[in-house]
Image 1: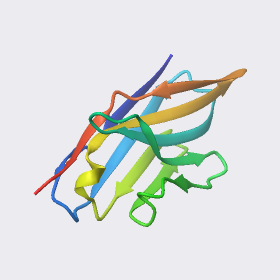
Image 2: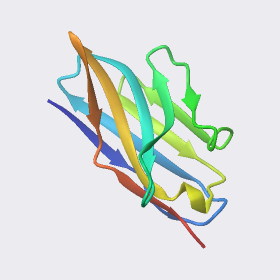
Image 3: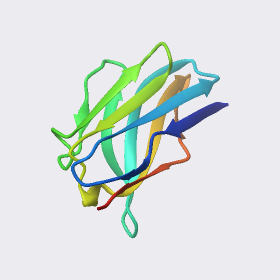
Amino acid sequence: QVQLVESGGGLVQPGGSLRLSCAASGSIFSITAMGWYRQAPGKERELVAIIPSSGSTNYANSVKGRFTISRDNAKNTVYLQMSSLKPEDTAVYYCNVLIYDRVVRSYWGQGTQVTVSS
């Protein structure tokens, strides 16, 4: 089994910054990709950023230039540095990890609330 533990959400004013962390533990053979998704009230879950094992990164257009995803392979941890936050960034943020163990399996974190409001 694989467990994902997220941390770092909270309340921040517009223009502020937050850093989210997600640590994976358990039966991890090979992580192929780590990413962050978010879901705002009444909306579908959407991809925010993803970083495959190659280290290249992809971002949603709405967060490009403001968010940075990174990973620490030694710690099986992925981070999301969020800057210049806007009220429309308010959502529950979920960590996702793809792990290869003969097949690729997808694991989700429990979600962390990010609220951007004055």
